[in-house]
Length: 247
Image (cartoon, rainbow, N blue to C red; front, side, top):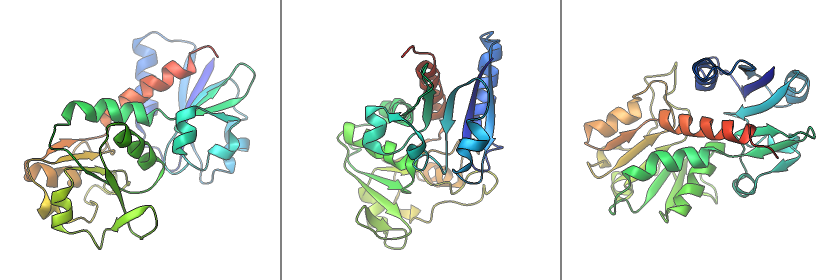
């Protein structure tokens, strides 16, 4: 039996376990199963996860996409450049190699919606997922700024310094923070939504609920709104290809 799973914290709601369980059933894959590895500290990775028999691949989610890296033997070129991993392959020699399939998932999801007037972007949050988003925006030649609670060299704006003018001037806004995800479905990033227009794209990496308060604000202003579901499907299928590619 080939074992796969998701590493994260408080992930009972997770997309991946349900998605892969249905995939295995629909495609008559009888020699594989997928489970959640819910750990409170990344130090539990070795004792609680690596001891699982038959491990063939893992996905990684919040908050471990960066802290998992020291436990791996090698990184794919893109994952190394980004500094974040969401997919781990167990090679035939028993070594662990890290990849980032968020890049593929986000690019496939957003690219069909981008038009000539989408010239600048804001990335809300600075965690592991935001690094993949930034990588894709660079590929698409779209300048961007990070928004976080605290100012730093990498952060151009804090939530307190954002204005409607700044929002109006950035036609793509991506929420990479967990704010608004289940069960806290009434919350949303604290930005001046009055600056939104029907020229904006609001992309929320959250998929549960399917329409977050963040996206509802966008819809109310006529913006294009995209949740994280398709991105998750694309990245999951990319992970599956990586796990089943002979290295």
